Image 1: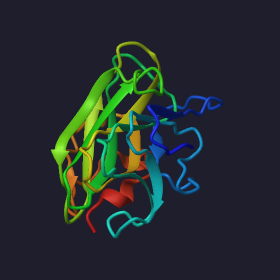
Image 2: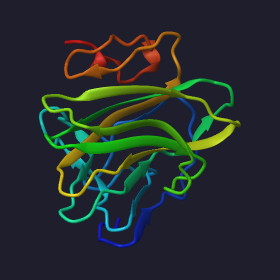
Image 3: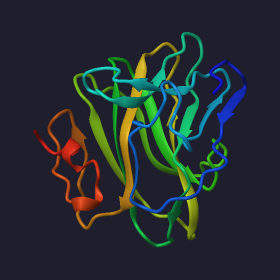
Image 4: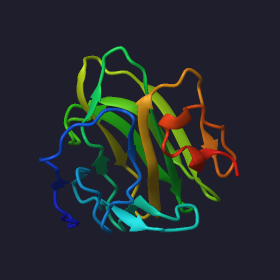
Length: 207
């Protein structure tokens, strides 16, 4: 993987097959600082790249996707899931943990038919400018696709230059549950009703 300040740097996983839901991504198979096999990344302009960090802080005590700031250039960095088989008309939910380290960050999630910045055609959720000082946050967002096929989800950091670090972990994509689970902040969260299909279930329950 190339982390230099080029106009556009991409790391594509071309030999990977597609998967069905539920799809999970927790970065534990990564060889730091690279992403796990089949997870593509891309930087645009002079942005730094997403990398994987090993237990970067107390809120993220395992391997976690991290964007670290650039002193001079705004972020324009992506990482993408593998291709996921999705069906038109079915409601899907993506859930993930995210956090910051005391500075404003910007994050959005999109989907599209190719694992590239240009291919991310549809917005799932835009966090705008935010901080999660003092804990982590959990986001749940639902989406549908227009036609049955293979889709990729992408996490896009577009923070301003000279901020700090943005973290994402414990990603789950699955068919939407019957009830809206809402979001959670810090250690207080809504108990999940996804049942045994959610392999991260215990991480999100109140302790």
